[in-house]
Length: 239
Image (cartoon, rainbow, N blue to C red; front, side, top):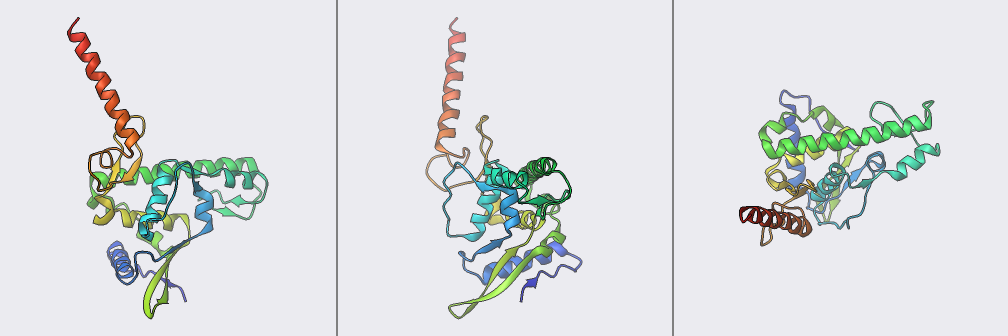
């Protein structure tokens, strides 16, 4: 039977974080999350970039959240389903539901706005994590974690926990709780290339391209621009 997080205590967020630590300590890193289909349909599937599992379910979940924040998910499938009358949404959270009396064109507009709002919320929270993780914790709504359930399961004779994320608010709250941990919060970066500004996790490799810039191409572009700027400055001095 599904176990819901108990959060009716004075320090609800602390209780939720303690629960998550318990789940993490009793589960292997490849323990899977089950994310509601509503979430994947609403936020879309990752596009353009190749997606491979890291073998760490929490990091994989956060990589998807980064893709949403970076506008790297494709919501065209949900848009087509809405316009064809195969899916509907509720106007409050834009969660796919049985088609309502709202015109499909309006539902499609609501869906796009909801995705845009979600991207901005995630970006704003990620910015706050990079500025001050302690302050960012205070922005988390622990009530939303009521819809993150843990399902106990036996693996090789050991009890582990399988997390089930039921709705959009729960997804964003769980992402927030993970991001304020030292493990992920200290690794979160925003690309300093003025033409990019993607969020990403630092990779511990030689050089600086995966600490300051999200990719080698952004690193090269930034340094090309800096080289051109220096050349232009030097040329002016000699005139």
